[in-house]
Image (cartoon, rainbow, N blue to C red):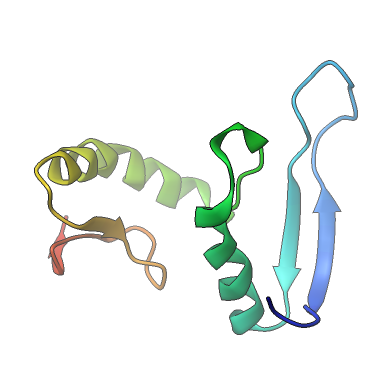
Length: 100
């Protein structure tokens, strides 16, 4: 699908207990295009695969998103397009209009 990816570094996170869930791996990409190529594979993963791909966001951004996620889910139930911006992950857009 795509060629060789360049990583700055990769980190295994957590303890290696066999009974617990798999440990997360954090990867720092050298090129933004490599990062986007990996993120594009997220839609092709099976629901049962126990593999997730997502950005490692700061705690403050995660807290801001927690308040906006119910509004995003409600908009999607109404058939609207709703997503967080990749460039500014604390901003929610519903049908192309920024929502705070």
